[in-house]
View 1 (cartoon, rainbow, N blue to C red):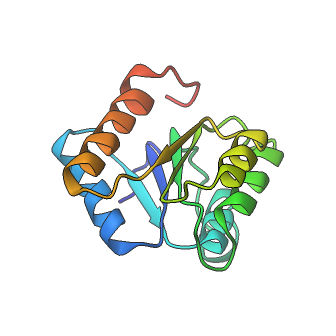
View 2 (view 1 turned 180 degrees about the vertical axis):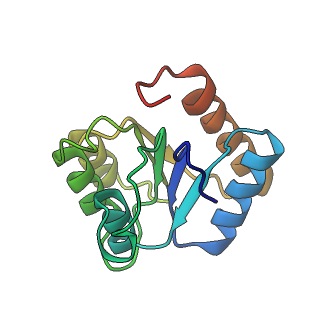
View 3 (view 1 turned 90 degrees about the vertical axis):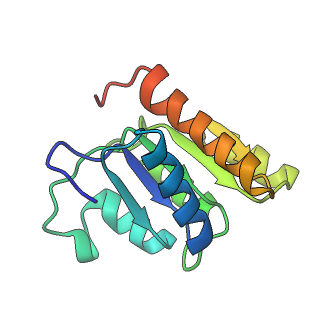
Length: 147
């Protein structure tokens, strides 16, 4: 789902059930006009840098990145490290949305510059509520230079 105006949400998530739920919640609440879903860390890094399969793409800056930590190919911590170390992407808000409750993951995410760390609730209704609240905050309430 791309539009010329750019990307509202860049969702980097390999779990297809979570992708479907997140997409459904954002549509239900009219929170994201455009959302790009990438399923692994390599795709995410190529998208953000305009390389690989995204070489011809004009690089829209997402308003927010929702990043899972447990990704194939390149894990979420390394994706976060590269996002925050690149001057072109370092100011994009990154919300870690993960099932990891490991203290080391939480600490590493914040040390690397994550803007928020949210653990995915297991129950469907709770997960839907958390996703809706994230969308409301990052896309409506939060002031971003990328609007």
